[in-house]
Length: 166
Ligand SMILES: NC(=O)c1ccc[n+]([C@@H]2O[C@H](COP(=O)([O-])OP(=O)(O)OC[C@H]3O[C@@H](n4cnc5c(N)ncnc54)[C@H](OP(=O)(O)O)[C@@H]3O)[C@@H](O)[C@H]2O)c1
Image 1 (cartoon, helix red, strand yellow):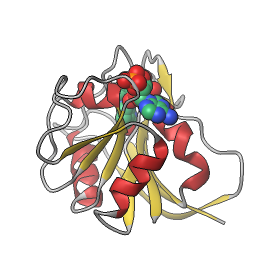
Image 2 (cartoon, protein in one colour):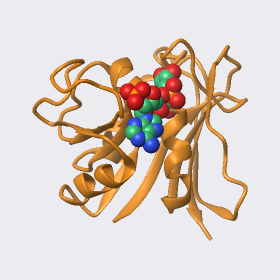
Image 3 (tube, helix red, strand yellow):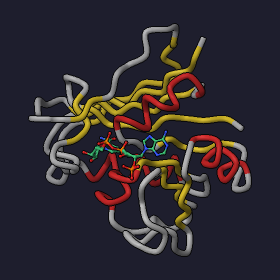
């Protein structure tokens, strides 16, 4: 089983505020959809509550030690409830060979040692954030890099990076 992180940060590594993503950049949501389509997603209970609905074409595996079965939409069709990392990995391995780690801060940290790819979007702005993505300190190389200019729908420039563990 292989794991990729997919994450968008501001210039300071911020990823969220009050359990929401503090920017609206539809081009990054489109990239998220394209990269993750047909792969399982592993996410934390808070991120699940923030998204609030199943995402089509992807089994969502929600990590929660406390969620009561049958509440908070857990589980439902296409959305599985995992009680710990071992169970999440077992569930993901039933759904494909590569799973995407879709946040938030706690779940990125939990999986960091297991991932071999990071799809990182850097939004070129500064936002008030209370959750952060901590870039790993071990060796990673940039294998793809692209830039996007602002337009009428995407107010800020973005940088799209694919990092691979060396
Ligand atoms: N910018 C981005 O790309 C991006 C992507 C995703 C999320 N976000 C943002 O990130 C923020 C949420 O991050 P967060 O760190 O607060 O929460 P989170 O990582 O989404 O979820 C945390 C929850 O996951 C469960 N959990 C964590 N470790 C576990 C383990 N070992 N076993 C079982 N369950 C475990 C716990 O749920 P229980 O308390 O129920 O046990 C914990 O409260 C939001 O602001 C969201 O918008 C941003």
